[in-house]
Length: 256
Ligand SMILES: *[C@@H]1O[C@H](CO)[C@@H](O)[C@H](O)[C@H]1NC(C)=O
Image 1: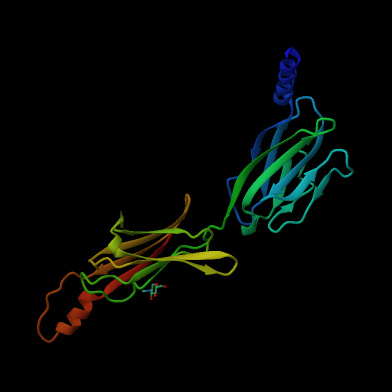
Image 2 (image 1 turned 60 degrees about the vertical axis):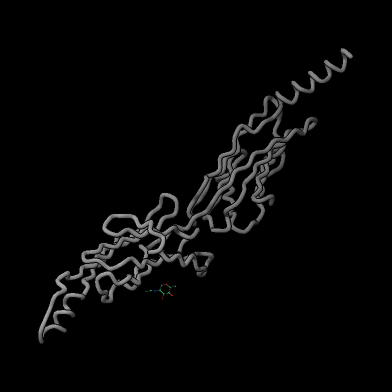
């Protein structure tokens, strides 16, 4: 009985003092084209390192085994290009991320014989493609009568994931659902997406429309200024000309 207790105590101590991965550091999100440094921080607690292996979504792409010459080896994986010169026993340096680089990254550390203990940790990396341009507004450059519903759209530039779009009128964010038409995201080449949001708020004089496209904290916006002549009374022969002037909308584009 005493022996069993001592045995379990010993096993327990052995487990707690052996190898552990103290931390994995993988960027939470990155832009396409950027490099990424993945770090696996482990504590061998006196043991000797047998191998460090890195996986993306359970597929191995890099291993470091100090007994081998050379100790490093990289496997080809779509979206994962390991820079061997910059990588080491604790770091995997990835070059030029693509949208296919996103995934769950795991490092697995093993100790030498006789223990062969291993430990692992994982973290997700998202790869973004922020829109390079301001969103585009269409339908604002025609004539609207006062109170006629607008027929305008805002489309983001190509991005990943699909940007969220918001309309503002004179600085006020539009939450009135009946004024918004969500067209969703449309796929475009290279795995990118374009979002479109329509606005059918009633036309008013001196309307400043702003469309904001966001991905996380990244923001792109465009503003168009719509001015209507509110003088809506006219009479006589010049009436049609006056009408033309009064409902004409002056549009200016402001790109931010
Ligand atoms: C707005 O987008 C929708 C969907 O793409 C399209 O059917 C409509 O014609 C667009 N309207 C304007 C004013 O661009």
